[in-house]
Image (cartoon, rainbow, N blue to C red; front, side, top):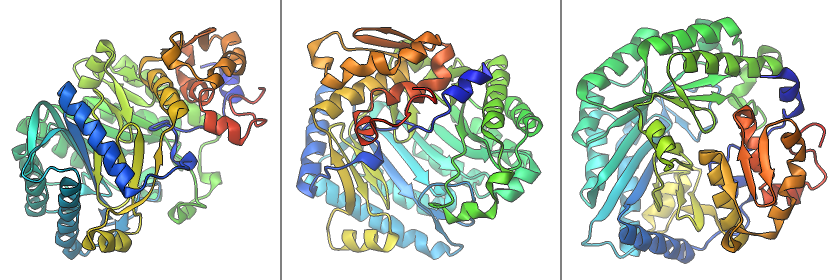
Length: 456
């Protein structure tokens, strides 16, 4: 990459796993409105025969990884598992009642267990949780069930249990294999631990294995990233998420274990990504959207080729499934026309569910403009282009897109017409900047701020 372009467009921006992004939610649905949105989305899913998705958040971890921005509860007390499972299943029962699903089966297309550390639960506890969900679901023929696992606490018995419930995908939190980096971020795990879980999963028939990697971590160097990627290429996961580290110690106190002096500079951080990208593409991985790579045989690559790639709070998925019913503390549900997030404090979440109250703390009802811009940003994030030539895809703020992206067009990063925008191969690295020009809420909050580049 041209380093001058990186400096020019080195402006912080959202990852756009949703639109509007969470900081701009300003119209929370009431519980009745949220349920109505879910019902509407379920009806459409039934008509289209696409099925629904469930996301379950399991917050528990035995130790704190200092880079982590997730909602976690650090504990070595595994006695919390069973009560939490019971609460999640009670929440599911509450939704089934409100959605009129009692005595009926929810057609389930996607299920994702995230955290925290879902394999904090023992295989028996996972069986209890999954059995309680699957008892009330009919599995869609085109299903995909996935889970995030920590190689340090995940056993073959965990994988065997997941396979019984027809899980196809696992995602391993790797981040970095360099011992110095692992020590400072408090995530020490060996290549052999990762190899064992990877090989066990393949032997059991899992069809997609993902590794999460992070660039820009403290003490990372070009050499350490090269060594990490070399190990990854040797283990050959089917897909890779390669995220940039976000240093926000004012939000996550655990990040105060190190300082900005320990972190790669902006130029160095981008160089880490570019080198990693170069090595991965040289090993046969295809860049998917933003921050993701996959082998040609993986469903993300196939979805990219078939134009069905989708993006939601879990990142990239092979197709769009709506609604996403979210269970567990801090989990976010998505009915396309609205979002709802559960209570972030575990005790409050448990208390609300015990009182048979939906444990929602906030959300957002999308207005007409939101819905139009959500689709355009999704198009850019998944297809690298979008078009508003038809009246149904138009909203007034789009008339300013060409002006806002004129500098990027001069630099060869986008191709613009009066009613379309296409991201070039050179512009892929600046996808967030492009999407920001479509983000009406961001623009209105800071109309005079240099949002898109250091010169605009």
